[in-house]
Length: 435
Image 1 (spheres, rainbow, N blue to C red):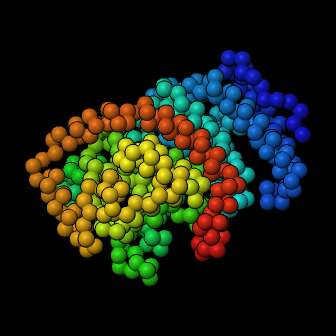
Image 2: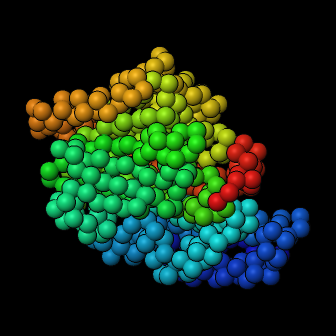
Image 3: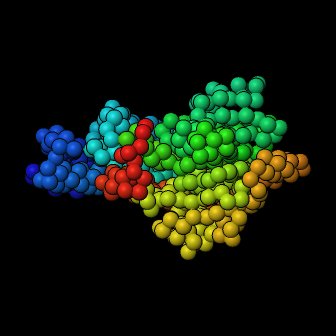
């Protein structure tokens, strides 16, 4: 169906975009002639795949040469801090066809994962090129470390009352500690598109409040019959919403460039600063919840608590765990955990590499209070300095940027692969679960 190959860049931004834009428009016209994805036969699906690959080749070829110029055009020559979502949709307006529009992505989110057209792959490849550039990538990483507008708007409320209720996330100041409690009980405190913005706002609030010295991560109590009245640190990703197509691809990148990275590195810009973080883990920490243990400074876990990354069964990359987990447990155990589903159980020797304290069930509150008293009782003047010093050898900013460049592209390929749908149906029976 396609009568020409993707254009080769010449080096001129205007000329190269003109050629790429014309090519992408022809490809879009061809795709519109095909049946919807779920109704395509083998021949049409092969044609759609061929056209989509040609479009990705054209986009990537253009960005390979011009990514810094494109990024500069979208950020007022790097003077504006633009978040990843706004950057992608600005690109869609300034360079039509380079990334999908906001409306197109919204329509894609109305489709189940199996019926998606795969347009979000272009977002991942765009971000991979941006993050792969030392100049543009460093600026984007820094932009994502700025506090959100939502947090700045709620800061006075936290300072005045000591509490901010964000629905699925609750923030409270308890003494000199700021406690972030994930409250998504119906889904056993799983994370999804409904929790992401609130989680980042909560982390920002804790980092912004000058009366808070230490951040605490906890899971709220749940009402599931099996765990009724117990705290669950987190069930990982809400696979039901993922299977139904309600979690967009960008969730993954925003999560790790946003609130997870802020826990690890703190805020940038005028509000620059970081704090120590403690995780109080009960029942289990699965997937994304387990990933959080790699960025906090102290982990208290109840004995027998399960800590694991079911990435192999899900068919996706477990955030930045591929970068961070080997630092805690070594390369061999990290590979077993990520590639083969090895589980860690608090109180066992392998899990001791992830946990600082293991206490009996029911003793987490007391252990947490003692740890917070120990951390804040003599002041924390050197805490941020020591955190920064540790990061110099462990995870310099450039290492994280390069990792996220790989992550953005590869996670987009995983997300848009039919294999993800098969994995969710085979391993999690996602097609049988209620919303």
